[in-house]
Length: 55
Image (cartoon, rainbow, N blue to C red):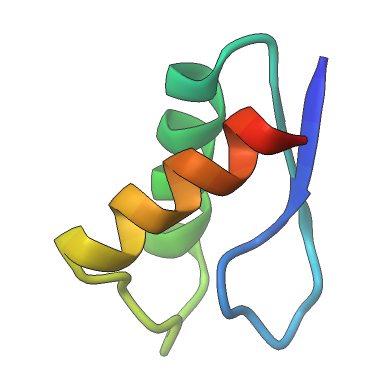
């Protein structure tokens, strides 16, 4: 199980998943569900994938 803080989100939600892809998919759902959530750029998403793998 992988757990990370929601990307750049003031709510501090934890996004969970069993794989990096799961975490990113769940993070995408989180972004859509929170009004005014900053949407990460493709470059930031790549950095995020790297961070998740390093955990």
